[in-house]
Image (cartoon, rainbow, N blue to C red; front, side):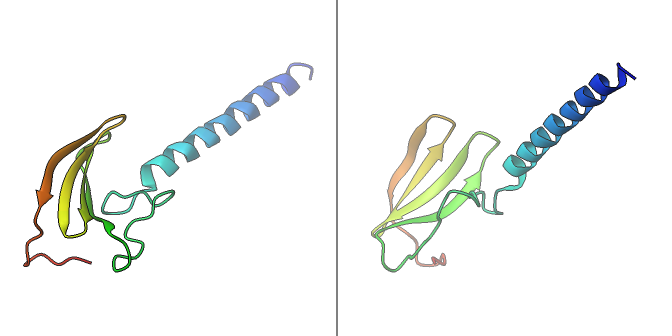
Length: 102
């Protein structure tokens, strides 16, 4: 009887820690939309007619990197976003007339 209670406490504690870790993993893995933008903590295309800056498209390359096409006024810029780095891949892209823009 004396060893059952501490063992029960240890197993319950490990079970709760495991559930917390599993939920953190699931939230990180499944909290992204189809385009790769975060569902939580990021606003994408809030009001394209009233702002000069707009995120046109976001594509995931792998777990750590993504490409983001940003429009400022009538010029687009292609950015490569990594963990702690941002790189302008191409700038001053003139949007083509055949691609639909929101």
